[in-house]
Image (cartoon, rainbow, N blue to C red; front, top):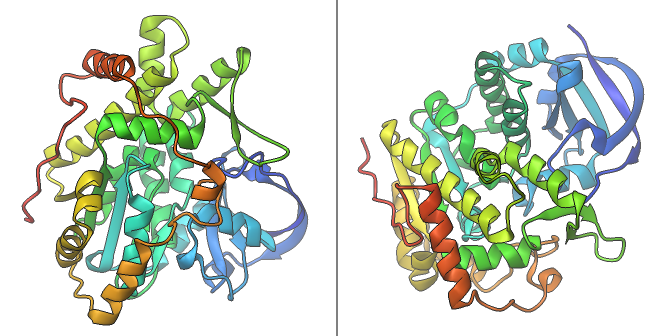
Length: 382
């Protein structure tokens, strides 16, 4: 079964944080190529073209180091020279030809806005390659929620996408977008020897940080001509945004149906925080050894927290590596992206007492399992 090379005629991603999709590129057919082409250096999985049942790989050339990118999917898009469309069946065949040593694999999940990019940069400073947010996994969450991916198909696609993405020798880490925690149990089941890390943050400060980064978290995610950033939605746009967010955060869709109205920004964020914290807790129940990293601890005692994290991942950084790690904490881990400190501007106001009370009320309405101050237990390695 042949693949097709696609010549890029235009790049048309709607905004920098857009979840990957085939519509990000306008292409024309460049002729057949062997599917094995995409296992060559310089090719990486970008997204799935579900309507045509194909996986789209980008050709960024062998000189682009995706392991140094703050956001894998953004660098893929910016550096893409061409695409290769691989039919699903050929993708599954390729995946069977790839060997992934899960003893060398580190999987970083998080709720976002909790130091996950900082932690991934710290791993990179020790010499561990890091793939930061390969976005086909986020797209798979949406495809499942939208009814376009039955459980059997999802399991197979998750496995195949992981195989072609995680390939490589030596220790290497993969950091996912927050919503990919929905797939964590599947991924951990496929790679039982992998180290599974979950980074999280107390609900109040996480909500404040998220409001600053993503607008009122009814982010309509339409681009601003001047800034290229997401802007808050108005009117009917809020409904469309929450429809889309509901595909990534099932609890948001459920809660919205229960209340019979649009959710407020705090309600939307509470749904995300609760859902992703509960997904992490479900890993414990499934017998997965989870390495929890709390943002508050990471900021207060970075050396101690990272030393423990590295040790549990089988890493022993030397003095030079530790100097590199220390420098990470002095830099903006998201520099050059739409989420950099300079792009976001000065920190916003903290939540006031009424907002904190409201956030706690909503979290209590959503869950009997977590509270705004939940601290996850430390898993004991099996």
